[in-house]
Length: 120
Image (cartoon, rainbow, N blue to C red; front, side, top):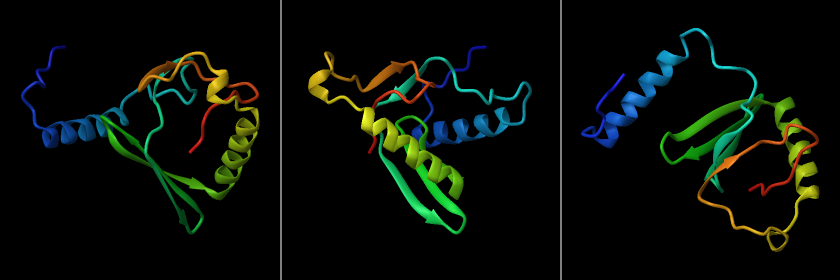
């Protein structure tokens, strides 16, 4: 399939992405519930969080997709807090890392005991 998007404006692309994502959500096979073994990651994205009556609103800014919002229940907020604290305790300083991070990097997540990384 070849769709020419080169002449679309930012607003038209935003609408296309939103409509395509909504359509994809209705199709089979559904997106996997398991995270991929490798992924591209936005390094140090902007984020926002605010409380909700039964949890928290957690938003991340993707440079191409914009703000992605997630409403997490209280139990998940507590779980993430403990996971991020654990990962922060395992963190190695930038001086211990040989190469600087790129703006977009291919990352293989560590689904084991945590791994390390910077949390903002």
